[in-house]
Length: 169
Image (cartoon, rainbow, N blue to C red; front, side, top):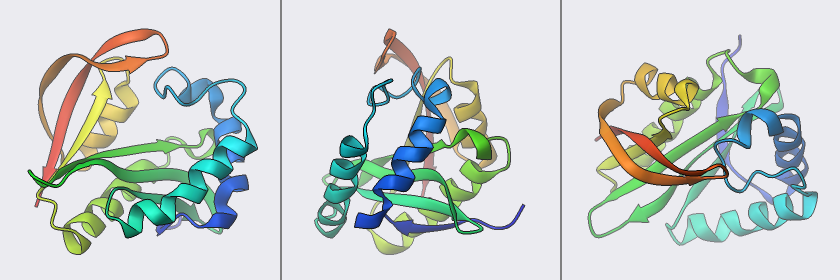
């Protein structure tokens, strides 16, 4: 496997995002409320179009993850709490790239970016208790498992407890 790289999303990325989401519907939809069977290119375009302004304003940083010129994942920082200098770090990998270390590489690159380019002190990775793959990624990245948060996430199937992990500066 070759190395991954990240870059903030650009306007031309919508088709890549859309194709990756459509390919990965079965794996993403149980965990991501925004991921639904009718997910459209227009939705991907609207999301991608919003990202540069959010990054400029320091409200969110969404990165495309690339390997060998292919869009393989998304990893980002959002839900930024400026008063207490922490944020959520989230990720998903397209089905054809799962199990190849892409998410671990992406989380490492994005957390390095966050601690180098922002004043954030803490990144939180919040995984549904049933999302074992996502929990393994957090563990492999060296995130500390802090505990279970009751009814923390609202999944398409309903409320779910979550496991909280953290990376700190």
